[in-house]
Image (cartoon, rainbow, N blue to C red; front, side, top):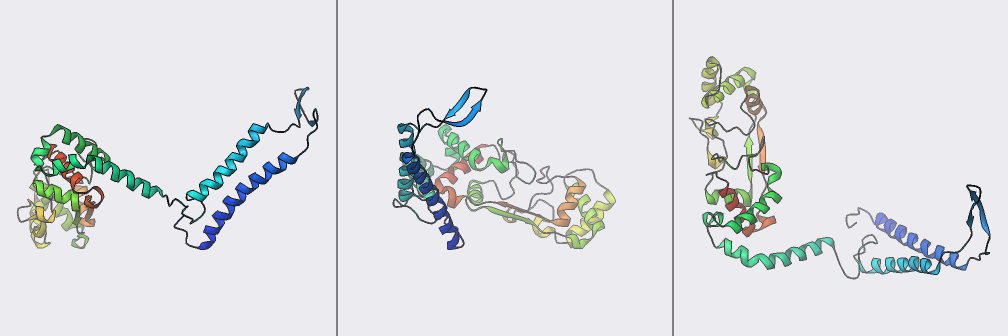
Length: 297
């Protein structure tokens, strides 16, 4: 409710809430003053003899409603609920969450500090650390890379030896901490035939079936179109730029001719989000160690 764009909605909520509570209170007062005639019915009859009597609510039941009204007013005075009013206690769900996180972080800080003082290989060899790293992975990483870390279309497999940005310890930490932005620019201006030639040449680099005539033309286009600037003259890629190796058997989006044509024509853009600010250095360190333990290098 702090996001109201005008004061009208703030007042609207306050009025609706207070009027609703006061209406309940008025109803209780009116009912409390009503007179009842013992034995008088409301004139409703069901199943021939089942009648509805006009009897007052039991006093204990009425007092429960009174307590509810009083509780609602006290609650709204102490906690948020009336438009933009923050409550006398100043409580917020975000504040409570931050306090709980801070409390938990304080409890586990000695353990995190212990692992922060160790290099990644040593952490990766620690069973308890890997259990912690796995829980972090399943919480924050599996949505893209999968529960088994083998990735999916557009998301890298973390268990093989192929690393787009490098698989050394410091490179993995950098990737998790600060994120990566992979961009393959579109080359639709080359024209459909040239792009098809390029696709066949790219397939030839990794030993996939291809049209040799088109691949020959594609090799020339590969140089003239500037592909060597990122993927290198031999197609093995450049980790510093995040340009993948085109000569291996690993394909992030697929290796079919149609998929490669789509990639060259429209380009690709994929982002690995940065986690340092959200998780902190210690959790990033544990995550990097866990990824290291998955088997890739």
